[in-house]
Amino acid sequence: METKELTKKEYSISGMTCGGCVETVTEVLKGQKNINDVKVQLDYPQAVIESEGELDLAEINSKLGKYTISTEKQEDKLAPMPMIGKAKSSEESSPSLPPIQLSTYKPLLLIVGFIAGVSVLVQYPFEQFSGMLWMRHFMAGFFLVFSFFKLLNLSGFASSYRMYDIVAAKWKSWGFIYPFVELGLGIAYLINFMPFYTNLITVIVLGVSSIGVIESNLNKRKIKCACLGDVFNLPMSTVTIIEDLAMVAMAGWMLFVL
Image (tube, rainbow, N blue to C red; front, side):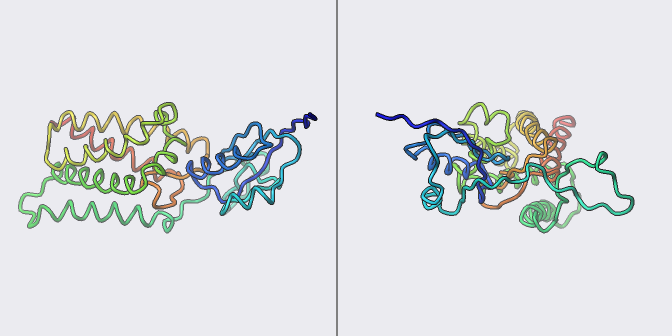
């Protein structure tokens, strides 16, 4: 029986936005008879495929659905942000993340704003307004609401979360457990259950989670933020860092003053 020569090529795949997309595309590609090995990722090259002979891209695309594989090379660097004032030389220029558009984060900002507002109103008529009580109610609302969105599509969240979280990347089950940890913390803050340990767990869990978020931003990785689960397509940015570190700071402050 004649053995076809093995070839390894790089391909681009359009339409992928998260870890779930990567898993779907990988599964389809691995199902092709003449593909021996495949590695799919969000950064270019998005797919490195070792196959016996040439791939029938038309047939593969018919099975990929909303994703499209091609041999056309993508830019592996983001276009630099437009600068106002003196332009930098090509030697001084460096790739940067696209500017933060508030409209992109409208769902996140609305949700956080609603939680913050409700946390104020629960103390009406504000005769003895307590900042500590506001923080506890805000933390409760934050964890309860954010865990709700993650639980809407648990597997989708877990896939996206593994793309940047340092624990979920090594322990796959953590992505499925994390939303329930948030749910438990939300209930604990709501009923003021063992506040010292509740705040301590929050500092540890969100502190560790922030490491992966910060690394992804420093490495300028173009990946999806899983803070609102798989419901909204929010890009990873400094907004995510601020969100996580603000929660860590509030939990740390409440832990300190207890």
